[in-house]
Length: 217
Ligand SMILES: [Zn+2]
Image (cartoon, rainbow, N blue to C red; front, side):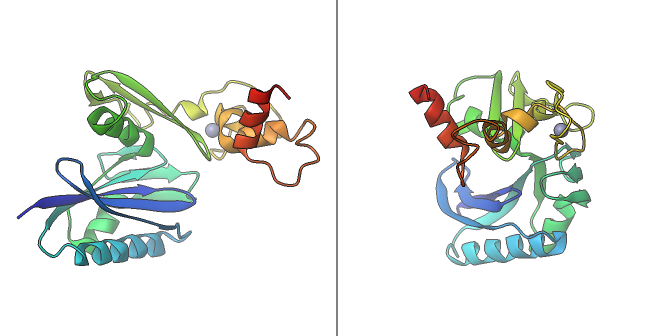
């Protein structure tokens, strides 16, 4: 029987998940809106997993790997996710209890770095750095093929390095001056809003700002 597992990316806006074979072949993916409530979030993820597995009755699901946008300890515990509004959550326990599957949890950017090393741009590399620019700025560090998680699970979380001080721009973590207050997609939009033509424009995306920079306007 072919063995498969789930990869789940829990984001502040959406949850993306895929069922993959052990060779990394993606069999099916799903995307749905993130719930604000922790219980509802895991109920939804478990329900989608059940639905997907229903499409592959001949496959044996051996576990799930979950990425979350925050520091993770012991491959299961999250101590605060600013972008999800979470406090302490036992992610592996919550999802494992609902699905009966072994669940391992890691920081989303660290997992993205592992994914790139396994199947993507970092194939063949043992040392790599990955940066993500979205709602925040995430970073994943791999050295000698191993994920660098740091003593508090925040290794590679470069988005919260203090880089500037703007008295009005508070980071989701509560501090001021973090890199992601200016370099994330939302930070880029906020900075561009100080200037024309974006000051007057009703809707601005980070791509608009990049396009304008490319065009030299
Ligand atoms: Zn911060």
